[in-house]
Image 1 (cartoon, helix red, strand yellow):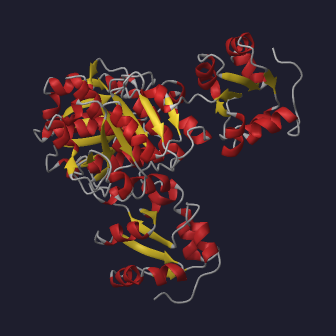
Image 2 (cartoon, helix red, strand yellow):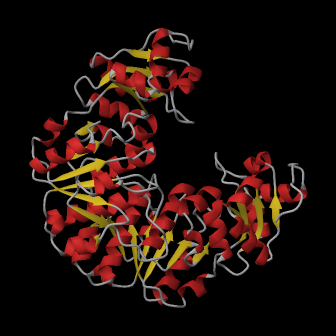
Image 3 (tube, chains in turn orange, green):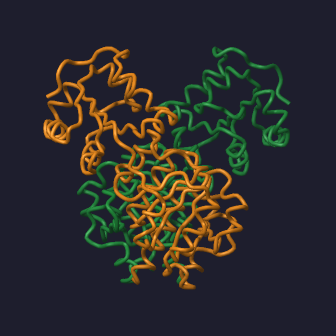
Length: 271
Length: 271
């Protein structure tokens, strides 16, 4: 069990963890924060994934197995007061467990080495909640790699981590390549590059019927508000739009991604 | 143009509008709030849809066409200070236009009269943002009616209105029927009733391959956290699950709904 309870926000460990709410500090430390028992379990499943665990007395009583597993993994367990936990956590109702995790992303080359057949690229995605939901959906649809380009939100942002519901820990995530450097690498891996955009000249149904989705595919998803810029649309193999059958002007990014990725999963599995 | 600017939160008109943030007052007045120029346009497109329009001086200068159209529609235009607008609006950056709208929902019988072939039912959906996103997705996928059962969130909740991105105004929305009263009405309309639930015994691919989705269908979507209760699952024709190909535990409700509704749209359109 954890020793003395930390009750001061000025404690150096608490201060260090609080700083991880900011991207610059996350990058410097190669660490990020993830809340709740599920996140702790996911981090523990990765060698060296859990760097430090903040708990409250109540959470320790509720999850003795996780506290024990953290200690066995060599991660310091630090008990803090409810107020400190509320300061550290980014949710309104923190669950009393806050994991300091080591970065989990991998280099692009390593992610593409097993020649994945379904890759998800987030280009210019700025809303962390949307990005996390796309990551979760990509995982569910069987996408084998997710790439966040340099123009996208940081996947280690607290809101993104929460919205990913653990998927950040499940599949190789690549962070930060420029789109123009990414394109040739995806092509070399044999991937057809499809951009999802409301301005696409082909509908998703047409892409399915034409057999396009049976190929190994990298799907590129863009910004919530204004789609993908021309410098991206000009360099992909096809721009595909999810058809709008009713009167909605557009789809939410994560729902459009779900429809595209599941269409690929179905086509590639030959059903 | 609007006359004298209202600067007091104690103004009776401002107080009346503020109360509409609460469901009980919305129900009593049959009115709800919708923010931004798109919402004003949508409300104006429905006879009697716009009851009152709050504006700021800046928004009036930016949208003279909307102010004029509101006045022509007979809706009082009330200019308020930036502080009052911030008080009234539920977003961090209000766009200076706030419409007081009349309820747009229709009775179940009227919504089912044209014998719709694709109906969306929100049962036990509690998160207003999720509910609004499902409504937007249903509109995009060509669902002809959306039903919010009595156990679901109020579609006139501000977050739901925003997340629907105008779709609340686009298609017949039914509010408040009990699920057990709804079921026989859907059957009488010739609809096959499918529940989307992770515990389903049939996968969506199996439902597509078996031709199930070509039939007129009512899709039932449930709670984000714990799915649909047995009293619902026991009374639908089939429980269908979106397959999870990767390691995600589940899908977000709105993304699961997108995959199901677009699968129906594709099957029904015979592509």
